[in-house]
Image (cartoon, rainbow, N blue to C red; front, side, top):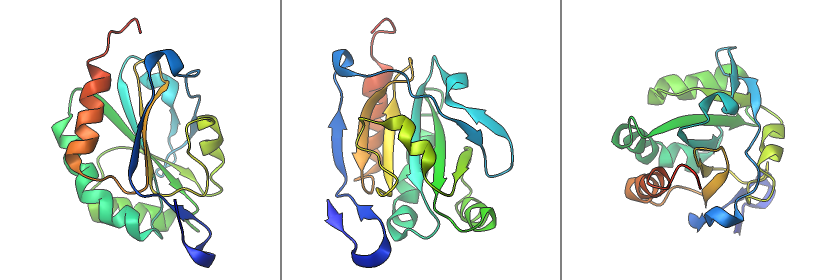
Length: 170
């Protein structure tokens, strides 16, 4: 991982980690409030592959990866659900402006202190690693992670397709 000096976060290098089905931990339990004030729970998405992207409006790499992320949303439509976790933004208005600017079509949790990331323990996500993306299997377990900027749309869509193609009883 690359340090970022006094900025208070660690940028990754886009390293992709796959987790074997037999090595996956318990389902991730995340409940919270979205940027538009709605309640959201990842448990409500069980049965679907879910891509969780950790971002912040203040994060240059988050802005840089957004076109690839949005392309992946389109290319995996019907095969995956997407959810964001906005961390460490000083106001919900900053985060809402980011979502409007990029026309992000999926909900994001508002998590100014990064506390929701604690639910991903054992997956390499920390409140200091931004951006980061995880792919959850249909049971809600971490199946893959990308720490840092998504290397490409293809990288993410391939991960989604691999997880979506797994046997549902895995």
